[in-house]
Amino acid sequence: MEIVEIKDKNKLNDFLAGQKYSQFLQSFLWGEFQAKVGGKVFRLGAEEEGKLAAVATIVKKFLPMGKNYFYCPRGPVGKFQIQNSKQVAELLFYEIRELARKEEAMFLRFEPETELKLENWQIEKTLDVQPSKTLALDLSKTEDELLRQMHPKTRYNIRLAEKKKIKVVESGIEGFEEFWQLISQTSERDDFRLHGIDYYKEMIKLGKDSIKLFFAQSKGKAVSTGIFSFFGNTATYMHGASSDENRNLMAPYALQWEVIKLARTKSYKYYDFFGIDEKKWPGVTRFKNGFGGQAIEYPGTFDLIFDSGWYSVYKMVRKVRRTF
Image (cartoon, one colour):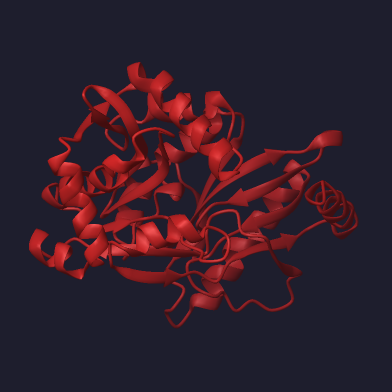
């Protein structure tokens, strides 16, 4: 077993595509996107006899006072259930620690798919970055089967949107201003924080075939929108928004259903709604749960600490900021 730097895009993406749920946030393209929006990206793999057993796409995140930390979104990803899984994880984390020393990173924030049983490492559970609970549809089912598993109200709203002649269309960067207007409205209405405007703009520009922007329109006017990723065997609902007006048209239901059908026709195995939480997002969770599917729960977000002194300062500052 050895740790290697992954430079081959296909090698990384093929490994991720072979997992049960293909994690787009570990993909080569997502690393390229993170580099575009200001992060430094490292891609490491644990290799056995020339074949990858685990991978970690790591983004260097910058903090005030010249400090930084590593972030591994929805990872590391690997065969951590096999007999030598502990060895795989330990070797990978040892290499990350060496890299952290060179880059002067205070800690590694990571989000494993399964619980990693590691000893003699200073690890703390922390606030989630990516949602630790999500909902996935099995797209091997027929359209009729998918409709039957939905809540009756969800089926009704999809049909109502069809009667109201809601049209779902794909767009590119030319639709960005409409997207930004809708997501800004939604942020203000539902009280959630947005990334900066360039974050979403670069995501759409870089997306190619893997990130797509869709609108649900009424009489040519966008009333709902979403950014979706298509990677490996999984299509994922990443960001969404809707207009303050025309809420009776049920456009978000039409948008989801049309993208679900598209993913199914393109032979994706799963559709990931990417985040449910009945306490934090009761309305959004109720909306997503209406489509049926299987709830998936990840262990959560953890910090592997390399510099305990600065990490304590970081935690204190973070706690103060959250109170304001």
